[in-house]
Image 1 (tube, rainbow, N blue to C red):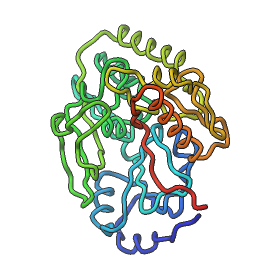
Image 2: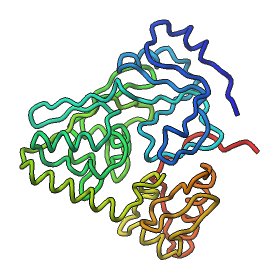
Image 3: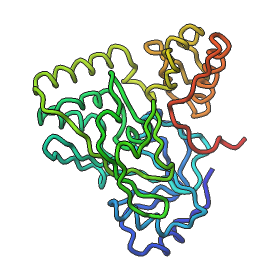
Image 4: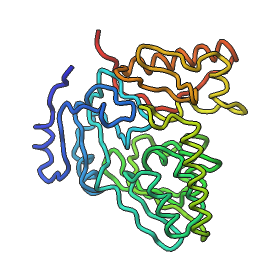
Length: 307
């Protein structure tokens, strides 16, 4: 299904826009699951100022959604109405400032971990274990191997829906487990992380251990979206899923990973509906077995395909 093309009107309203504005652009190739319909408009801003200019001039009735590297995301088969913003090359810069690292939110988490290792800065190796980009880590307090974004973040920059700039301290983010309390309409553009002086070889060994652990326990070479469900208090999601008999369960061409059953996999040719239905089936079975309701960690956006 194609959405009405509103890009000519938007371009007319924004003569100084430098970023790319594309109508009915497929999002499937921008997600790790490789599924989903188009964005009515996909906008890839050139810079933070370009993003602010776009938002200042975008009619308020047009919805806005932000995607990063697409690791923790299901785009539904009917696509996403309004504007989808993807922060790309203009948001990838990484700068070392003493024991701190400043990174654009389009930068992959692993690149910050590698930069920290090269600079002999400890405390950021955990980012090696988080698939995706810094923007996603900020928005959901991404974590792995005993540390979370909140443990390393000094401050974040963001642009709001009206195009105004904000600098948020760690406390302003109101972080809890896999949750950020900053306003939903804030689009993060930059993060500042704090490291501590450390031994390069020891940090390298820590990162190697994380890499080996991920390769041994997670289906990282499959079309997957990372951890599907948040761990409930005092429980591990994968153990509840396993106990409910869902390891290897299939819906269409979507499957619960045999290797790590808190991961869903596109076996090839799965639809977004297959993956989401599989996730909801797992939630239902876990609820019936344990009485515990699993909450989605993967973000789901857009509309189902029209019958």
